[in-house]
Image (cartoon, rainbow, N blue to C red; front, side):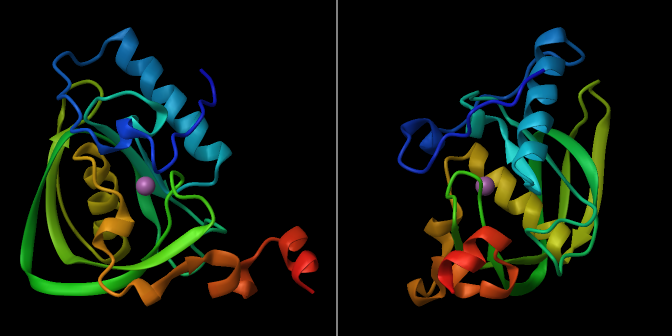
Length: 182
Ligand code: NI
């Protein structure tokens, strides 16, 4: 159990296609997931993919109660999703602001499918099968992109909608940054 360093954009590991998990309910898998939760919570993230801590496995975690990084987002149940598959439902696309622990300090406006079905497995190998929309659908698409070596800036349509979060959203900047800028 440990907070692990998060790889940052530019690291070639973030661009690799991750390997499927072949054994469930193992000590290795449990300790990977435990490190992922420690790392995500320490960084106040809404999700994390294994490649972000340097492990090329198809494992993502996500979940959100009330998160200061995402003040307007609806809650998302805490989930471990392994070997995920996403199916887009309908053709509705919506733009939303995203950030990423591998792209610190920045936010970009990213188009995502509004409704999806996702399937995969939990750490014990039990099936997960959900239909979701909105922020939940966005988080899953963002995290699963990491497993295919895709970072959200690659999906931004209008690069004018990409910038530093304390400039774009000064009202949400933590106190120290706010006082620096005044
Ligand atoms: Ni990310």
